[in-house]
Length: 317
Length: 317
Image (tube, rainbow over all chains, first blue to last red; front, side):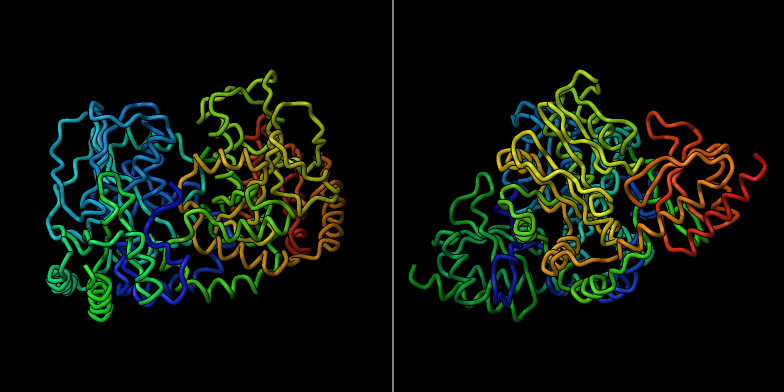
């Protein structure tokens, strides 16, 4: 799916608070960005490693697994498309509502989506709900997207690196570099080998690789204070839940679903035009209603703007 | 194919002259790089356009075609894999020797390679020979990779944007940004639409898009003096042709094939270790011999180093 995703910031002018992606805008990645600016002239002048071996080795050390188990990808999205390609034509099931690319990628590779399938796609914590799900399924294959693990308030199950489990990770959100595109797959060496056989060379650009190497070499430094993030999330949730007409759904992360009395599409445009606030119209997630929106906790000032704007727009209901 | 490509600079230390890729190292892209360093903090912090609409529009203006005819890709390589995906399972033919990814991508998508096919892959000018080929074939489909058009000493046939023709372009070589990954496809709107349906979102990173926009907005500025490049190419060719034992093949560009009496693999390692010179072992191109190497003209000083080193290594033959 090309259209209908969050963080469509590029379409709007004068946005002062961006709640539309699950990236926390207050993330401090200054040292990483400074490093990238320094290496940019060298990095861009030569081809990247056709497959990012160096980074795969470092990520393997971090996760305490074999480098043969790691496949670095052009964002979590390439991971999803490679896995869908690997299972071409095989029926899959998807726990909806969830990130739409599992469905889109499966359809591109001629897989039917049916509850009878033995391959399951699972996002944990789940996007857009923010809920942590059980990974205890007896399906033949479990594809578990852990792009939001860093933002989980619950501890996730330990990794199981066998032929049944494929995990997807993202470095995009935690380090606020969605523009660079960097993610990876962890799985058994035999599944990883099959994925390597169908991948194109140089899919991950040299700066993304460099960012990954920097992150790994700095031992995955903290970029936000998560204690503060949870406190601010609780404060925001309390304020949102007190707005008449809003139904606030449970979440185990800093992003959450809300159902409001106004159509999401309309509310989104009004907030953007009148308040410079960008939210995620969540109505195109399968099983959700035309009234669902998704927001992710930002800093106190932005959150207060959001609450005030929602109060204003929903006062008539 | 992941291994066996040129520009494997990342594997070597102390390289003083790099002849191994078709990028001309003397390319002046200073203003572009300065621009990218400036926009990096902003560019990396948000998702790129899921499909690079803005750049597609600018490229369409440059080529004087409809934006519906342009598909911007993660390097020419994503273009190759998308086209191979589009023709999944259909027999194809390939004019060998040529860039190995046409074969690799076709194999990934279950296409057999046979002279009886009605889809033809063509690289023009051709890599590794540097020769301009006729595009006048009566095949049903022609996929024409024009990644090296800028380096062609002959004028190529005019574009024909119908369902029979798919052209691949690269911005990587001309602007010396192979680390960034940026290319595009030009074809009929109906074929382009089919390609859009099978592509993943966000495959092109935000800095690559930004580079493309800068290039288009600056009207594809010259980055080398091509008159000088041809003069230096002629000088290098003359010097190479006078080394006993070397068979220099014809070329219409700045890169060329040479057959030497020494095995290419061995010669490459010796030149790297003893002289800090990196060449392309071309022996893994289909139909070439174990004695073929490829080099691309660099500046006078580097070219003289290459000639002296080859004389030294081949003097025993």
